[in-house]
Image 1 (cartoon, rainbow, N blue to C red):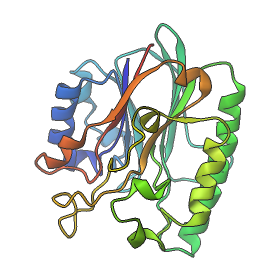
Image 2 (image 1 turned 60 degrees about the vertical axis):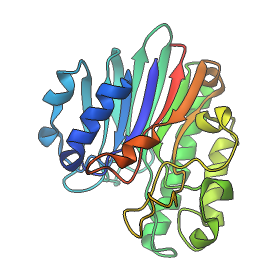
Image 3 (image 1 turned 90 degrees about the vertical axis):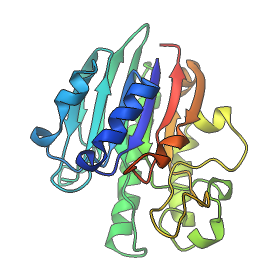
Image 4 (image 1 turned 30 degrees about the horizontal axis):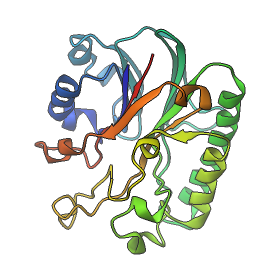
Length: 259
């Protein structure tokens, strides 16, 4: 089973590139972030015609997450637990039924800039709630993963020029410590498990020719519980899609599982 996570930066603007990627890469499950669409405005017919069940947690003009799945889904839920007042559409989860049952969680973690400030405080509070959900996933017997745009550069080797990100919310020590507090629970970074070397990125800014200069950062991650990591066969980044017409500034990150 191939699962991928992809921040599409607006489903209406990226539909052609998204469909081309689905046709060429053929993931069984795609977790999408930043769909920027209300549920009723999502072009689900395009994906249902390709054999996907479509589940969305949308929000007008901002945020929004979705699951496209060719495998049966159960126990679908929306919103990261811990703050009933949080109205931002950033979390979706479901159970996938294959050879094994697998809990999949799609997330769009807050950017947090400018930092310091209210947006950064929201980011750190969201990550604290995320860690609590991660503890619950680790305690359950079911294999589980959390995948999406984390808006976190974990290590200096995850940026072409780490020195320019020093004061950015994506790379501040407090941000990385909050991320490490999650991974240190026992989660495996699927991509790093298969590719330890530097120079791999999942985001290139639209400005200043970042793509042409390969001036990227790796901020899209698939974190797996030990039971899920035992099923991991391979992982990668579909970098070439960044060169498509009207691309997202992110590219898909994928994992192949024995599911």
